[in-house]
Length: 77
Image (cartoon, rainbow, N blue to C red; front, side, top):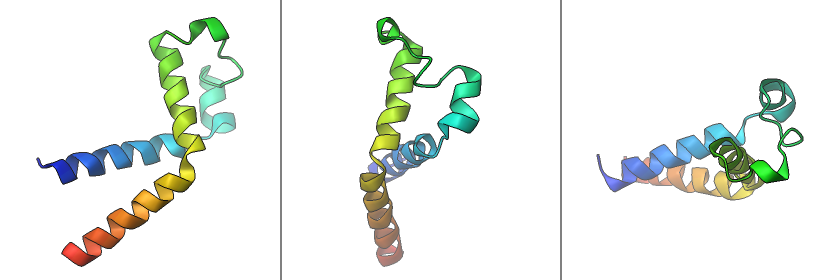
């Protein structure tokens, strides 16, 4: 497994987190941002919710990274 494969894996994980819908998926399971209290930010669940919302906030850079990845795959074969 090379560095490129590892980077592609992280990009796929970021894409998976970015498309999660709060109203249809996260909130019914208790993972919504409104259910998240300030005091629980240090817990693992709080850190994971923060990561999900950070990836949803950074969708434009994800689109650019996906485009670069696709172009590099087309060029390199």
